[in-house]
Image 1: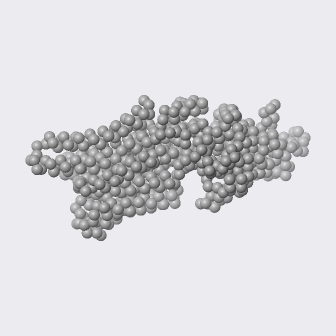
Image 2: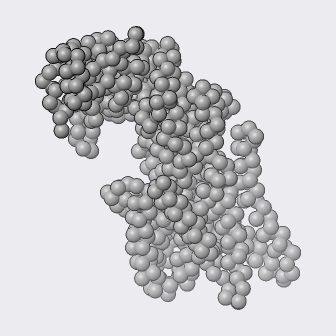
Image 3: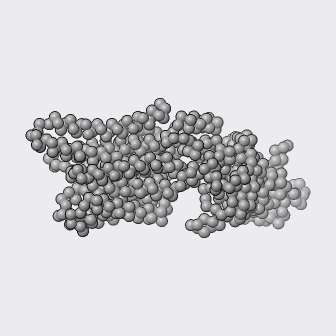
Length: 322
Length: 283
């Protein structure tokens, strides 16, 4: 199979993973027997909800790829590095301080919170040793800090905004048409990052000296990739809350499937698997047995993703001890 | 030909002066060796020529200021050092070779030509069986070959190698030595090494650094005649051994040297030189 076929296959998969679920949602809803006025509303809600789950999965997966490649660290994603909880904390703060806060302001707050948390994690990790494990530990510290603060704020926020508690682990329950433009901004951002940074990220994975002699500015590339990943993930958090481990797992899935580290292929395939995974998770979260109603999709993803993370961590340490 | 004038490198973070006003000319289409103890500036000199560290002064490649022809320089010169290997990022040998061709490759995706050239160089270095393997799965010796292959993947005119012989067994070192001499008919090779035996078996031109300055630059025969320079720099006595045309430098422990001199009944030989240092290596 030549590289051209692989490229084509990956992009067809991405297209299919976005369109098939939407088509399924559309047809399965039409087949249900509902009164006329209700059916349209249900269809619109379900389509938005499916679209958001797909696009959020796409953005978080791409963000994970960019963070892993630019920091040369297979153990990180936006959640591990504290971006998720930092952004959520800022969103809660904004919800609490401002009456009738606009989605625009909410997104901005999330970006500021997410990037601040990321900067904090990087500074602490670099001051310790800069190793991949230092990033994980520093990230856990920062995440705990902002998660704790978020839970604290939640008790007040929840009186003003009922869905706030679900955002703690990520949810698509409150899918509304207004979120579309923000989600699309994040999608456009990761595609721009893909187009302009994926080659550079490949060079960066070999080391800073290699990147430099291949004509890639390592510091600038790392900064731009972190910005794209941090901002896009923060926007997703501002709309749907924190969804952990998706950004961590999907790049590894793509690398395993493709048997390469090439971000020009890994990113689109990770996007495809992120979309599908989050869509399926959201669908399952709606149909939990026992009549408990909906559980947050993010919680389900964590339950699947966290063991995967532990396996990675174990392999990392076994590798180091060899 | 590569030359440097008043080349100074100061590492900003640590404030360490790695090179102090180095003036140097390295001949084209030869294998040049940079010798010197740890922290003498070998790696920094290679990095400065490769334009991957900031420096003051001038580096000229074929008479043109390297900074003004940077884009072309990235195509014709490659610098090979240690590859970062993060196993879980899944970087394969083929990936490394393809990425290393970026300055000469066209288009966004990997082209057929990139893959073909990568295969070609892999065959040349006997690592075609490793192309699909991840860096983390390789032995240190295999990784060293991959580093060399990466440097050669874009068919450079100048090749800078930072300790290419480390982690290699005797057979591989001999192979590397012959390989570098062979390609030096069309490629300027500059390497650093800690092994004087490998250096003198491989290289025709020598640069000796000490504490960021050049203390010797000249041909192999000149160095063999001035082995005391190495002795002063390393603090270990050296001797040259000849087997016909094959002349190499080997370091001696002070003990060996005394035994050797006693058995020959000679007070001192030119190659082993400098009697003052006979106690220096005695720890």
